[in-house]
Image (cartoon, rainbow, N blue to C red; front, side, top):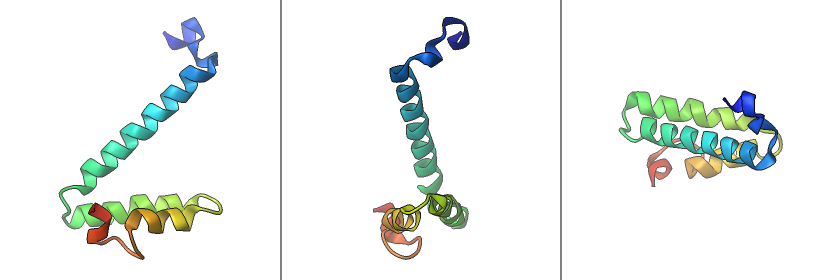
Length: 77
């Protein structure tokens, strides 16, 4: 339907779609990590390490999300 109406050409519509995608991904990440079991620990480690691929700010961003140098209790608070 979006292709038919050409709504993908409007900048505001595109920005809202990208913002919604990022919010859904963040919600899924928090829901995955929240039980804090062994699977959650390694899931949080792998998913946050994917952010280290961002040029220039990746490693700083990962340490900021972790709240330190590794996934720990500070990650949840």
